[in-house]
Image 1 (cartoon, rainbow, N blue to C red):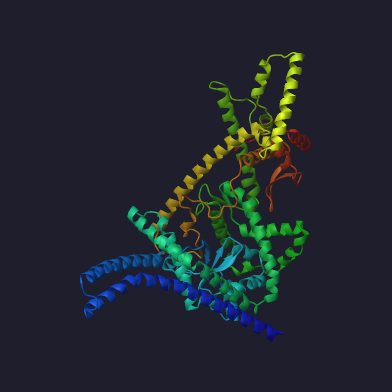
Image 2: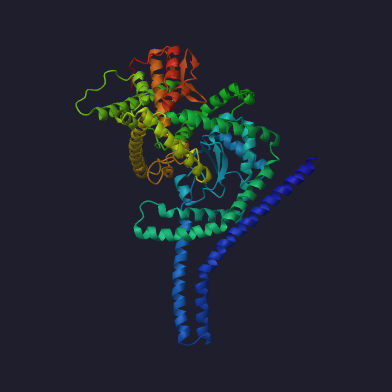
Length: 633
């Protein structure tokens, strides 16, 4: 059976490699056709001049044709040269990573080289980490990448990019099994045709982005746009072939990797899915609140282990996964796992939130032991202070100048009373001024209304536009006070976010200036470089996140979060509750050591429907005193 399996693997690998090479040649043919089209006017001009020398093309008409074709050939050749230079010199996109020098992870480099030897493929040139649950090979042979990363990407072999959560959650054998198909891809990547096709596609992709480069004058930007249009046409022509080429490379690598740890890989793939779920939950529920407070958890990868262990405790489907923790983790392959985790955590904050490239006064790390006090409690009190700031502004605008501020202070009762206010509608005044009708008038009006209604209903029933649900869209919101408060709160948060973006942009500009002025010997001296070198993680208009974790929240969602924070502050100050951290759900309120899980629906009932009774019942049961002022930031 082993011989049959090996034969099938060899056939599948050969098929994938041949398909990849065939598609690579198709990509190169697109390049060849473009080159032939560029030199076609010059070839025609050469033929015309040769005809003049031999006496076949003589006369005034042929002379005019020669000059026209010559001018056209010169223009086309100059344009083709400009396009070729831009495509060759444009810097291809590179993933922001934390690069590992071999001195920082000698055991990991040894594992990857042994794996490459077993697979019979070239070893990757370097290893880098990314704060994501994925692994791939990335070509960094471009001179711009070699300038920024002198320690990685040298030679013709690609760089192996490994997801940092894998190192902390997976065991050494599982990591080897997961990396086998990825490392096997270095074999097809070394083929000259595939390498040339990849360089051509990456160059076209980089040329399309050149017009968006800051600092270009209008003339150069106009020329870059023309080059970008040509590159876009060429990329569209070879896009399908390039995709099929990559599929062939992946198929060849997968077939070759079946010879190494195939049984372990089946189990390891389950851990990949579990790690992805835990990583996503950790970023959106735990890390994101800290990032919004100007703090970044310094041990995100270690937090994945805690989150997945908690998941295995809660979910019987994940039962047994935590028993693997007794085996050697893959992070033991690093010399200093804590330093690598901190660098990856900072890069994750920059990619998913748009934070600065390095720590600062408004951007400092936080340990997990300090998270409840430094993040959860501070977040609640900041939100509560913002909520009362909005209430003060609304009250001041409604009362007019000279009115003293409210004396009850920042209490939960004030918030509840505001959300349960009902504004008088226009029908109240109209009802008070309406004339009083007699019983006879009412009877006459009723008869007329009945006849008119019966006729109107008959006409509406026969029409195609009649929809009895149309009037439901015109109903007023159930809680107009919440809408007004949510609108003011959204406006205040937008102003705060704009100020934060401007501040971070200024800090990033100062960092780029300092990095450019630093000596070359000082750059890249650390074993975990790559976080500050990629300034491309900032957007074209400022330090925006490349991969936002959540869509913009609605005003009602923001209001519910702030009301919940106010309730938690009141519980901490008056009912001996404490802030806590739930590894799967983020900030949590602990009452008597137990997490309060029934608070959210009661807050939503107050915000959405203006019904305070469920929340008041909860406050009375837990001993929270809403009339007491709370401590704000």
